[in-house]
Length: 344
Image (cartoon, rainbow, N blue to C red; front, side, top):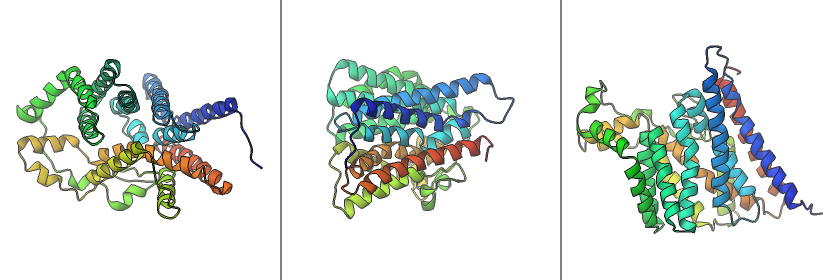
């Protein structure tokens, strides 16, 4: 017997699940440190709430043509509980970078708006958001702009160039400082020294870690791993291919970013291109940031995989796999937040 759920009930269920997702990332705020400023806790709470809002808007736009809100919810779930994002927010306690990660879904939302409707408003919106990301995290600004230009070429969306150009104009102070550091000796004047980053990349096994990690290398988490294995099983065993172009694009982008984060990627060779390259790679600090961006990209194809498995004829699989992913994501996230705050 097929159980039918009213549309209103589905909406309530969607927002309840989103609230549970937000609740899962909050334990890290309440660290066992009496000296911690109340203001920092409030800022972190606002960042998490803001991230939930931007991710909901983003994934609803990406999956607006889907039959249900299921893929949108899984996109939100995977992004909110992303181990690398939790690591940035609570273990690094980097408020600026956490705020930049809050705005990443908003930037994807803006680009999707350009794809849907090539208007000046959407172009200005996208440029403003990417500039705002730059004022929080300069290197993330550079990487996001680079990915935007690549997307403009691969997806044949020339309007992306205009949004990127507008973002550059708004971010001229950031670019001026970066140019001074790379080409005018400001890097050494500030007392910094060049270094190699190859050794700080991910080893192969570190990509699949869930509960524990070392050297600032959080893995993809159990929930993401189940999603990707489900997608691979559907594609190679059941022959159910991914039809959405955007899912394939984000998947390929994630693979490229993962390669950049690998400890054998020849960053030392790139540093030999000149003094500017030596300094630029040093500013990256660690290739782990590329795997963080890869995980953000993987949220889209992983959500697509959950959408496809939910349509399986075997109802046990159609319900069991998504529920398993929800429990895995929330469980790992709560464990990670608890471990960081000293609760584990």
